[in-house]
Length: 443
Ligand SMILES: [Zn+2]
Image 1 (cartoon, rainbow, N blue to C red):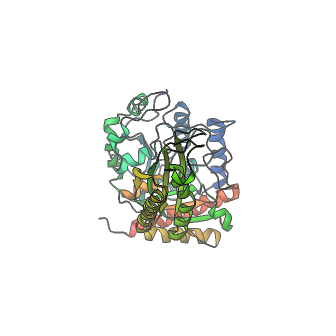
Image 2 (cartoon, rainbow, N blue to C red; image 1 turned 180 degrees about the vertical axis):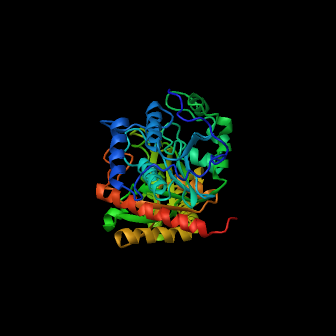
Image 3 (tube, rainbow, N blue to C red; image 1 turned 60 degrees about the vertical axis):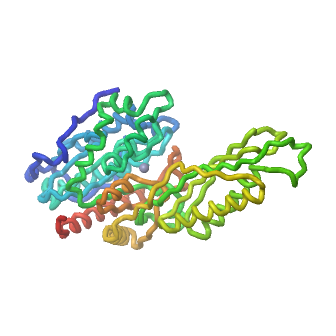
């Protein structure tokens, strides 16, 4: 494991930084989106193999990606450091300490795509270049790029690690026992890259002067593609209810047990499959039965026990509650019909995170000015933006179309012209957000 590039920095990353006016980097005062696309390809060549991106957090490839990011920032009048949770911050000090944050994540899932997370970060680099050039090193407000640590949770199963630690929503005791496939615990893996597990939540100080948070991300789904749109304004991220539902019946011989004498746990479980489609249609969310296991699981026995998992997501908290209520009611009914018993166990839940209405308006405007139209949509996946908005920071997210509607796969892709459009629109959003922050009274 190579050593971290940057040492632990001051509490907020702002202490002692003065406006760097006059130290300009002689960069053009407009963004150069084709440079970002070239850098994304450069990163791919550096950190991907024939199966896709391999930038799993806290591994040498991830460290290499971080070094790549730091090298791209070299020469700009920035101060960079790593916080207590391993998040990387680059700060362009402005005339005001009020800060616009632009976030992304350099980590990927194993065999991942070339855009997920790093598009956001490298677009942020381009915006920092533009601002440093346009304002001679000193924009009206402070602008900070953050590369969140372990967004994907690919190694330990806990996604949004760095952003949830920073936002204060991370449950330390819940993640303490997590181990990777090789048996290494999360605290040990963090120690190997110089992060003290016990101290990760002190990274929350980074948000002290945060006035707004922006994130650009590939959609990772087919909605924009199907509508023939390039960009979307993300309303927020879905709330989630995730449960294990176990039906308890009775094992019985498949030859000697008449059909009307069975207590078939699978019959009840199987009826849930079409039911969740009706529930989702009724309420407008999404429902998934992602796994099904049976006991004794042999060809000659009626199923004695059947465990299914249910994942339900909705942007509206009341609708999410109603979807769960409908699923509970249906499961009880199907259990009674089949003469079996049903038991529920919650696996996880998350409230919907709604982004800031005024920033949503700015995102619409930036999109309209760039492609002539805007479109609002929820996000099914959670993002770092979810955690930042939970910390009370006004947040907005912009989506760019994904080809194939696929992500977390080496075939993940977006047309280069769409990437460039997205970077231009996101840069406009940054300009609007800076003006918005400047006009806002500090609370
Ligand atoms: Zn991502």
